[in-house]
Image 1: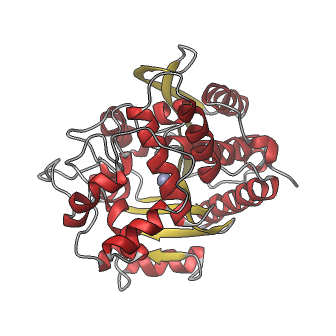
Image 2: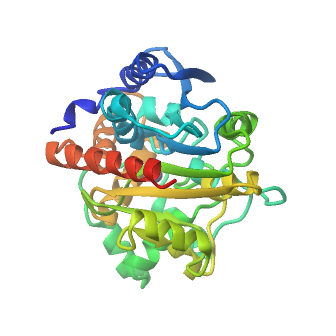
Length: 359
Ligand SMILES: [Zn+2]
């Protein structure tokens, strides 16, 4: 079965489809405006669908679009889930399903990975007491290279590799420095923000009500852009020796579950949604998996991010780079290739099926 038709051409189509499919299945629906508008002046919302027990013991959460443009994929999984898989879902009485659609609706609508304030939302969920400032030493050194204050050109395809060589950094070191996040360069890549985002406030105000008194939660946050093409990995924060790590490996497969690699580097990334959710529910077994579906080699992904960010901030209106960088960004996060799309949605659906069956 092909799932290519689960993909929507734009945010509004995706949102309407998600809501219609959820309603048809009898879900309870909520919508939260982020008080921003899309390219056609449309209101941008985070949409929430709930199915099953209103006071559940177990909850499976599936969230999409924390990284804006990646939402095209996450939404496709959620829509296919609602339209096909869940129709015949034999769930336990105590269970509920919570679907969070388009956690970064601005990035989804405008085809950016970042939100309306250029924030990487997966670096914005700081824990109480953590400060919205600081960056890895190397980020400061490399800021001028990663975030030039000029429009991009189509003709510098190997620039990152060249920079790595010139500066004597290995490319692995570069790609590990960048994504851990930073709080000092508001126009730079992987900026975590200077304060909690609207998405943060919306989740903070409602997540406790949605999860209720559940003792067991499995939360799958859908992402793209990291890893081997058309395969996935499940990144978890739980230490390898922990019980939850063991449980997750058992349920989702040792080949797929990976302990967070940033634990091994000196600058640990902060502000991840998963750690924040887990801290919010200390009384529950809150298992959080960042599902990353691979698209293109990391160098190409970072290149596309860098070019798009330059066009966004430094190209004049109607500059041709706005269009091509946007298209390229979408391609590196949501490849047009039909077999990638179908295969990844199919894997995403099976993954949610595993989560539902895990209890
Ligand atoms: Zn992502």
